[in-house]
Amino acid sequence: MFRYNMNSCTIHIRTEVLSIKQANNPYIIIPKHFQSYLYPISKPHQIPKHFPFSISLYQNTYIEMKEFWTSLASLMGVWAFCQSILHTVFPPELRFASIKIFQRIFHWASSYCYYDITEIDGVNTNELYNAVQLYLSTSASITGNRLSLTRGLNSSAITFGLSNNDRLIDTYNGIEVIWEHIVTQRQSQTFSWRPLPEEKRGFTLRIHKKNKKIILDSYLSFIMERANEIRRLNQDRLLYTNSRGGSLDARGHPWESVPFKHPSTFDTLAMDPSRKYQIMSDLKDFADGEAFYRRTGRAWKRGYLLYGPPGTGKSSMIAAMANHLGYDIYDLELTEVHTNSELRKLLMKTSSKSIIVIEDIDCSINLTNRNKSNSNVVAGRGLDGTLPAEMRGEEGGNTITLSGLLNFTDGLWSCCGSERIFVFTTNHVEKLDPALLRSGRMDMHIFMNYCSFNSLKILFKNYLEYEEGDIDGDLMNQLRDIIDKAEMSPADISELLIKNRRDREKAVWEVLEALRMKADKKEKGNVNEEEQEKRALESSLNGGGGGGYDQFFKSSEELSNLKII
Image 1: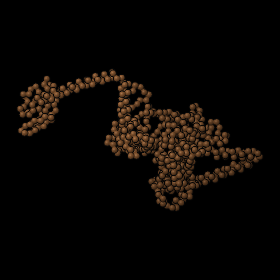
Image 2: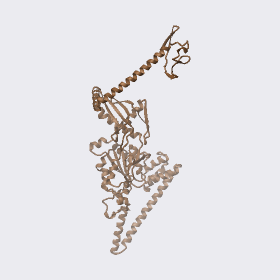
Image 3: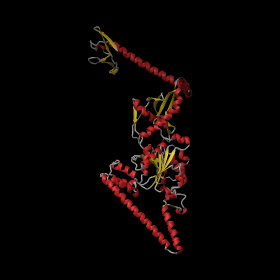
Image 4: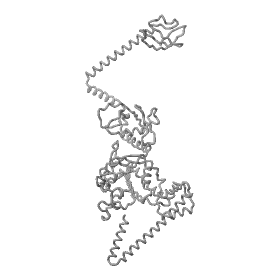
């Protein structure tokens, strides 16, 4: 800043001095209000007479800058020399001990305490870090100025997070805590079985010492619960299946997953409303029963057996349960599990808040009813005939036993996680061993029956958008009288409604006609069966002598075997 008094006026001009070596002549650039001039310092006589400053001022400034940089370079040299002397005189151990003593004195004098939460704990991912990151996303979206946006692979929502080396203030029960996101570069690794990220990430929690007990006892647990709730709300349902032959994926997991997009809910499920309400109440009591199960000393799990004819909505019921609770589904394929040990390992790799499903369990492996006569089950044969090689345990196939499956559902290994639901489905419940069906394993048995009149009204509402009272009363009475006799599955009726959904009236009449045909066919079939049984009995009794009675008992045994099958 230079000042010059001319005609009783003070002129302030801020200049930048730039030394340029060109042809051994230093030049200075002086910005002026009207124009800029480039003046050679070695030729002051060439400066215009109207220039208001003396060249000596710029010469002095140039010399002062030169002396400043020379002094700074000397000071840096002295600092480097002192640092080398310090490293030579004081060994690293002594320096480290001095730093530790200083830090202890600082922490003792400070009224705050600090906690570091790293992203990776050894070789495993720190779940608390992920929970804190997800929990802070709700506060960061409101109070943060610089945020990082992320969206998970199977997530339907965008989450907010703290940027690198940013901080956020949170309040819990009137207590103020400060979170800081620390990101530093990780030292280069020579060799590692599991490569670590290049950046070292972590959160630092700063709290007042007087609030230490409250924060450690309840605040961190609150963060974990809140993070799990946010994760369930943001993340889509996942459908898992066990890998073929027990192979592991790239992350070392035996389960493969895809997004679960099944739209079935209890509102669209074709079932009597009172039974749906009973099932929904039972599911709610289970989901909210953590304290109850802990108080009673029971594992936090529950089993459901869905049985009934094909096409009655057993798979839709499982999807409705998953969507109602927000749980993931693990579809366990028993034919791909070779031993009981593999079955336990699969159970250990399932997450909490999940539904473990075994569909058509009577067809998966040979789990026959031990109370049945041994004459019906011979070596290598099931109740329905010859079993495949993988189900007989031949050539390295399936060797799962009933005992292994029982321990899977109700043994010590079944409580290695919490809030799990086991669901078994079957079309022939009589084939299953009673030990698999008792309470504690399958706590609730749900019979999925043929379509009833109440179920039919739900189907009309779903497919034809018919409300109560939209259909003619006489037509509804005919449907009510015939539907129980027809024993038609909801899947068959749904198919008729889908084909004729463009003409709603025609669709209703098509359903009525199909129900009548099914009822007539069933009635004729019952009459034919009764006539065949009567003819068989008459022919056996008219056969004469003891041979006739032998033939009678033989026919009776065949009929009993047919009923078992």
